[in-house]
Length: 309
Image 1 (tube, rainbow, N blue to C red):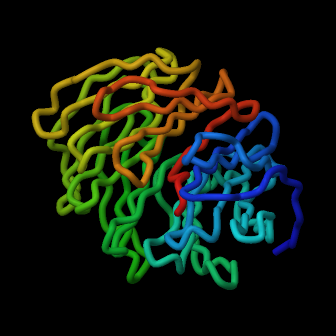
Image 2 (cartoon, helix red, strand yellow; image 1 turned 30 degrees about the horizontal axis):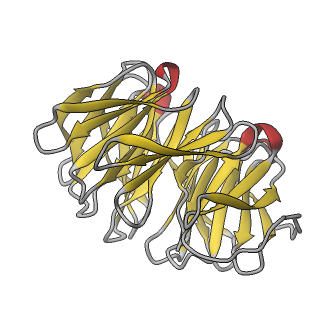
């Protein structure tokens, strides 16, 4: 573990915050969502991509593929307090609901590294499918689900004994993965088949395949899990789907190459990181319209859960 410092600008005045990784300029934009302004810009070397915020909101974990690991940003000190080396291809990252473990997908070594959040030591490396990307932990902290891009599958890991218990085929090149608040359904964005696979978590079986637009990257749920929002990279849009009927509700134009997407804690406003535009679009989930666009840093990706408290 290497301790590091960082530069930032602007005071952190209110909460909640959105933490947006800017891969092309090696930085993190901190957005105060009270007024949707960037209040800090943090240097994060290593081409930051993935992001996960601790349940307490005091730590932000940022995957840094070129630095072969992740950075730890302390939200109270407003600085990077550690850089942790875990793997050659760190990309997707998630944190346990109790904040005690961090999970990092190793794109090159086909594994998920389990890291103790206090010591920042690797507990175990778990073999999964080829090129794991998106990660999500069940609300009860018992299961970890992994999207394996080149295996076209999702792996289910028992977090008690840290073993893969099941794998299921989905669409072509799954990337982003989202779970509902009850832990009953998973939504998997399949980049090359232009669809989303819906899995029920108990048996990890597909229950629906939802057609969206070009190159879906990630998704987020809003309005009590009643609407699914999916970023379409090559279409500069977000698809909205009714999760009860599985019917499309809208297609929302956002910035160029939308990637990361996450819902504000108010469960109504959906934030979308636009990679080529270096912006974040804010969508009102009720009206299904973009209500604001925020300028961030160069190459905004924000792959993962980027909201804190």
